[in-house]
Length: 101
Image (cartoon, rainbow, N blue to C red; front, top):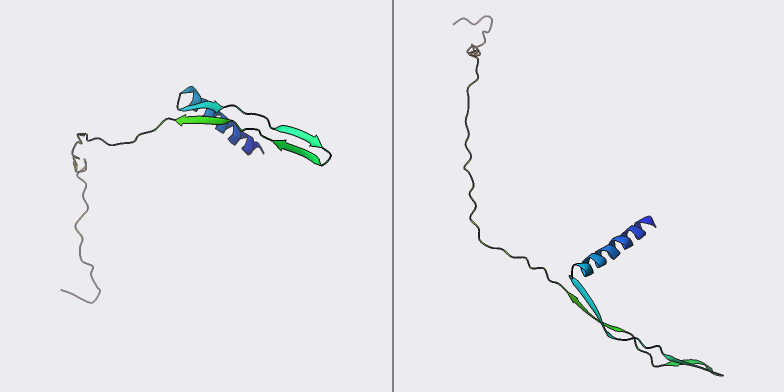
């Protein structure tokens, strides 16, 4: 239930913001008229009446593209050797007992 109220409040605030920024313009073009109601022995009858009419104008949003020149620096990679001179000893082939070379 709280979620429903939160969504309803957000929707009302969005409509208020749209009207305040002139993104949404609502004008009533025809007034409402109530129907004529008559009650007889046979029942109640209603005739006539008119619903109101509105003219709603909304703003537009345009999305486009334009050419642009963008300078992109080239990547530069620098490899630095280690600061110390400690290096591993070269590998020696394993010796197998019984084999002499």
